[in-house]
Image 1 (cartoon, rainbow, N blue to C red):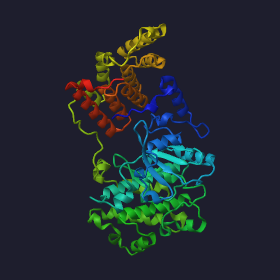
Image 2 (cartoon, rainbow, N blue to C red):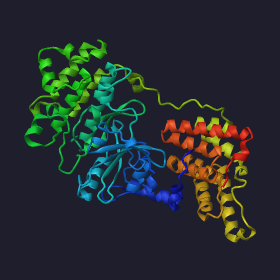
Image 3 (tube, helix red, strand yellow):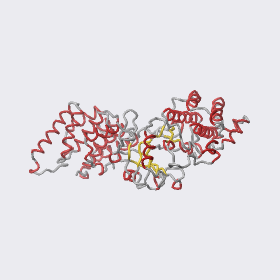
Image 4 (spheres, one colour):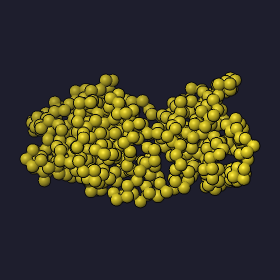
Amino acid sequence: MGCCESSLFRADTHLEGEQKTQQEAHHQNSNHHHHHPSGSALLDPATGIPSFAEFSYSDLKAATNNFSSDNIVSESGDKAPNLVYKGRLHNRRWIAVKKFPKMAWPDPKQFAEEAWGVGKLRHKRLANLIGYCCDGDERLLVAEYMPNDTLAKHLFHWENQTIEWAMRLRVALYIGEALDYCSLEGRPLYHDLNAYRILFDEDGDPRLSCFGLMKNSRDGKSYSTNLAYTPPEYLKNGRVTPESVIYSFGTVLLDLLSGKHIPPSHALDMIRGKNIILLMDSHLEGNFSIEEATVVVGLASQCLQSEPRERPNTKDLVATLAPLQTKPDVPSYVMLGISNQAPATPQHPLSPMGEACSRMDLTAIHQNLVMTHYRDDEGTNELSFQEWTQQMRDMLESRKRGDSAFRDREFKTAIDCYSQFIDVGTMVSPTVFARRSLCYLFCDQPDAALRDAMHAQCVYPDWPTAFYMQSVALAKLDMHNDAADMLNEAAALEEKKQRGGKGSENKT
């Protein structure tokens, strides 16, 4: 229940350590490697995406349940040379972990430099690279996890409904935008662009996998697909160029048009014969605009020109596809026919604290914590007379100063005072952790807030407030499903408490 992890008890969780880590993240570059503490990721305030960092192998092993075969999400299962696993970090963020075969990248420095190059990219159209691991001869990449499958699954292996025409046009535009961004940022090469590299996020929006921005090995092949889909110049010289990426984009356009993975030569014959209707996916049942389809077919045939110089560039892709967007206000998850990822309705009645947390109303949460004072801390500390030392009095004095600052909404001062109290460590107070968690939320530091709420739960495992605070921090981190689960758990604990379940509470 909850997300209490003993490994989260680290000396570096106090403010000074956090500030230092954030400064390191701010100055990161390929020469200044930043490590995630205990697998927790610092968010970039501008994008809301975790800052790029180096992970330890043990973090990723724990996140993927020891690289369990149950966690494999790559399409060819455990038969592929490069496996992709779904994993979950201590802060409950889902990740995708790509594991390379031993010796794919013998030189760790070269692998790290390549990863840092891709890790600098940050865009809403990419499933962004958030880290890498270079332990011994292990080579792994860590990316944002996309929960709603690949374009290949939705186009070729769908169960309930095929992708509607307007959504296919959106996929084409968004991937064109991703490639244009990468090109502008000086990373125009994408290895083996195909329908398996296009993923759908929790809102159903299509994103381009960052894994294709790196080769599968230092000197490995860049195309794993059938030779019929490979750019003709690659067959001659074995080199990926910006123009060969455009060719591959053309094959994706054919997939979107036909709903099948048909060889470009076959499709081009149909296009030249003006058999556009024959090319179109029959599962669309005619629900598409011939004019729009003609534009996309024209763009696909330009991309598939055998002469690389005659192909359009990424700017041209966006300029051609942007005017075709006919349903800009309809969310992608509606067009894809997947469930809305909005938080579920709570299954238990909510108290005033629960209501405030579900609304993410920090002012109301603050009022509630001020009124509750320390009554929930009873029984969490048993102190002998000998422990009432000068140090103890100093510690209680710092808590008192923290309480005064907290009441007066001076949240940065409250963080400093509560951190002094926590760092002494003689007395453990779940309320102090909950209060500092709220201070961090007011200071726009949801990662630190989540960590404190988890500490509060570790001290007092059945305390609803610890769960409520986790739910708010998770919602601030855009992890809305987890936030809804946590809110329900808090409400259930509160209900149990009100029914007289106090005897089963396990305070430590």
